[in-house]
Image 1: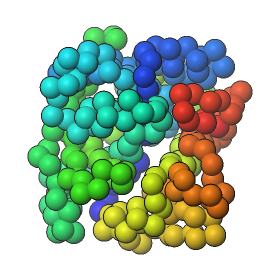
Image 2: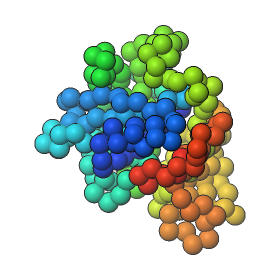
Image 3: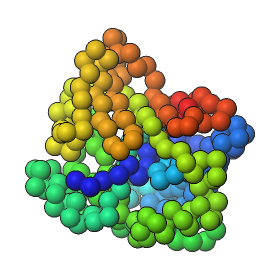
Image 4: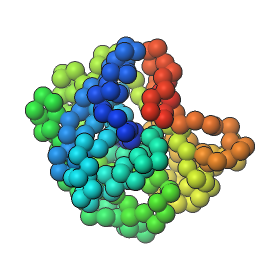
Amino acid sequence: MNITLDHVVHFIAETPQNIVDTFQNKGIHAVAGGSHQSWGTYNSLLYTASSYIEFFAIEHDEIAAESDNPLVKHLREKIKKKEGIGQICFRTDNINNLQQHLHNQNLKTLPIFDGSRVRDDGKRIQWKMLFIEETDPSIPFPFFIEWAENDDIRLAELKNSGFIHPTLENSYIELIQWPVPDYKQAARSLSPLFQEKMVINDAMQITQITAGKTKIQLFSEDGQESLIKECKIKISPPLKNGPLYVNGVVYE
């Protein structure tokens, strides 16, 4: 399965611009994203070289309430309880082939969704999304994205437009630490996706998935013996003036 980490979705209850201000006040380049008009949501973004963090919020709840997009539904449900990492997204260059591969692994998927948003500079960004049909909503299945533009064109445009800042253009997301109800159950559910890339570490009480240069550590949020106690995203090289606590997540 040929996939690459695309982005981490951080669910927030305040305006995305407030997140931009929080990072910029620390000298870290974050930018306004735009509105998903048909979903009733909007976002802001922090880009590294080839992946990013999306700060995802409800803009118009009456529209979001009618959306059939699983990510929007998840946002509306989780944000009532707490802010923090909502889902992780992997990038593919052929979402139809990926869907067939998942079906071959006996994983049911929802129909492929079309997505778009209008950036503050007026450019419309388009993509396709694929979600696994969840049998256990407590397990954080990733979702998948195929951008309308190929990576070379898309990333070059993001650099030229100032979204990927020179201070972050050689950086990457090194580590994601994410609480789940039960790290062993997470391993059982996610094993069809990440069999050879997954390690269970009972000493640390984590399930670790390796995706390229990124390590994703799922730890039991109520585990008394867990050596990991907080939701964290670590960027390499480390963020200037970090660590920084932002709406339920520690950024380093």
